[in-house]
Length: 273
Image 1 (tube, rainbow, N blue to C red):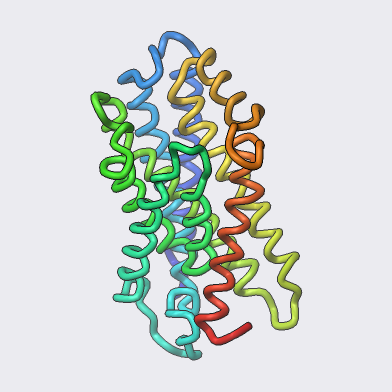
Image 2: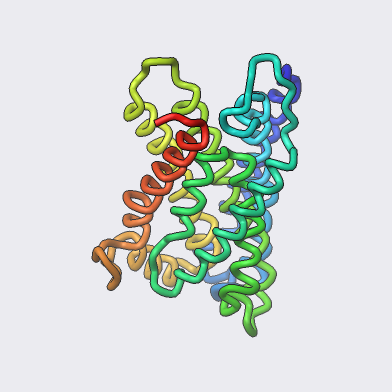
């Protein structure tokens, strides 16, 4: 593929991010005038954030991923000059598997352990950004509608927010999957694994953290509630093992463990070590 759409998609991505940032700035979700947590105004803003900011971001990095036929082929099956479809039976089956695993992992939300991050991180290093995006999109909707219906039970705002939450979360992993393949799977022969792994992880994790900080905590709540939730999940140790804040444990345990699990699965699939 020649990448002729990369430049317009890049412009669309930056334009969308700027528009989303301006919408957040002018609507000021940290203020009381946006109403209580889950108000209609906040639901509208999370839709703007997802549809205008996150979706073009995801499309851009999925498009960049699609430009590499060796990334889109089944592991170990690519040969030089081979024509590979971005969406193939392999892609659809992988999306289904990732979606199902992500949905089931949603059962652990009640115990405050981010096993969903582990599952989707494994998919990012095993399959890459396109499968991770659609797998999470499907899995998150199933998890919040069927696995953990407390998200939507008796709460119209919760129901209306399921899809935008899934979109911006999936966009994070479209970016992370692209990064992993760019820095780890495409590293030159003989180059060490660890520096490439750390580069991919360190570049991706701030987007993971900031995406949720803005998309959920800041947009969804007035500042009094947002500050309390931020302190609970980034500062205060949670009661579950190993007594670390929720997002710290996610960033420094569940995500890298998931990435390494996906890496190991891909090596085994390709017949490597």
